[in-house]
Image (cartoon, rainbow, N blue to C red; front, side):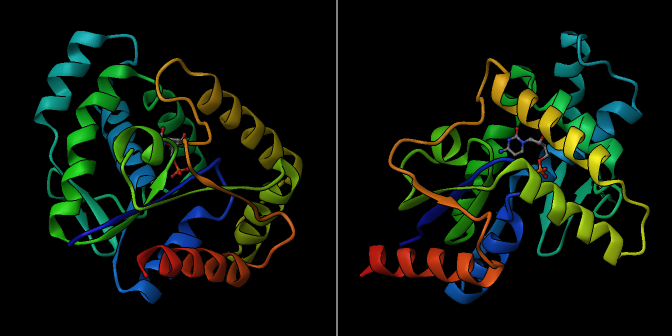
Length: 218
Ligand code: DC
């Protein structure tokens, strides 16, 4: 019988890397719901469909095909895997994902992923709205400074320009957007295990998640 594990939390708390590694160890699929919101935001912005034009949005959303692959995302057969990982798309995804019309259009796509086997889903509302009956729910967080430091180190490692204060300000702004919105605000889902990773290594967080899941599956 397939089961669902959820990890919610703010940007940069380490959800993706923890979910990816835990999925590998547990032998289940990893569902990156943020990538879906990013892909949709990118295509809507490129098509110049403004966030306040609900009618156009609804029409466009009914025509966009999103396909999730093992290591990427396709929109209308076009691979956007790397294009969705830019600071511009960070900001666009935060804006478009606050819209009810966007969220409801993407609900079914996320939920149907469980038809293909057990999953570990990561996002902002996966434990509260998308999979309220998940087997185990986690809420992964870290201080804004710890999260900004991780993003900064990542960019420097890739040889990109990075300004710590700029990254910190963007993280604080995204937290505000994601927590302050009316629909599906970022919150700790009922029954979720709360984990602050500020002073933890990635491996420690992965071990914590895997141990809790194995305990629940016993
Ligand atoms: O996790 P991420 O940074 O890739 O998410 C991109 C944006 O999408 C972020 O602003 C929050 C939003 N998002 C959401 O609203 N709900 C989700 N389940 C996942 C992401």
